[in-house]
Image (cartoon, rainbow, N blue to C red; front, side, top):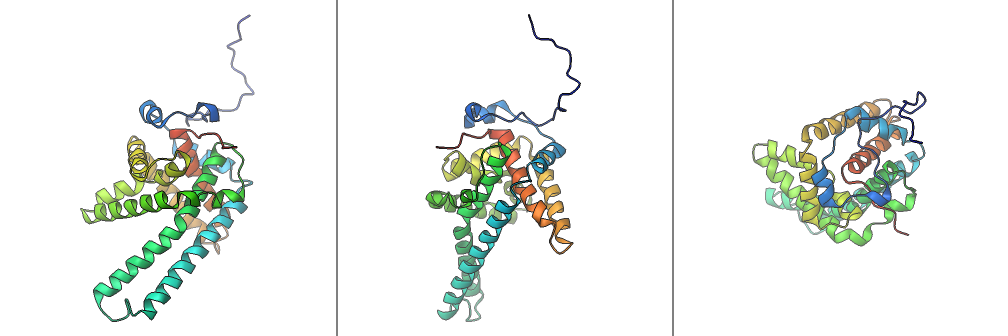
Length: 254
């Protein structure tokens, strides 16, 4: 007997988001780019909000470690450069070089943690097991993560110098490059180009998604920053939902 096509009145409401791709059905990068995707801002944010519970401690703890490491590295390097007299002689070039060195060193030390936070959001979006150890699991890709981050920084800065708009475009288009390095093992340039090609399909939607998430973060700071307990996990998981919608998520390695 064939199955009835009568709608189930108790079925959960459907979403405009692409269905969650199961671990076994995650498409290849080429397939993901060719098949296309779509989403709504409310769909991504609502999907992420449903998954905030149970991940707040992991994500907030990861962010605390992220900022502590960044401040420690930049502080120590700034002190060393000061002892060597670099950036303290009053010369503009010397000050510029010292600021660049401090910024690059701070970013380099935190890219593995940023990748870990991204993966927490992606795993939560795919309903995979999430642990605090995920934040520390990606130091093995330190070099490609560093190269990806530096390339991204240089290209965005150059784009900003070229009439600003190219830099804004690239800063949004490269948002998924870091997780592509760790979740799919892409090389730095492959990750940047894959992220750019995917996000360009719905660039304005992605731009407004991050604009809304940024506004939520800004508002959450107002009451003594208490709202960040919910807003930061929402932001990270929303990135994971967007990533899952575009690329799917591979199964967790045993």
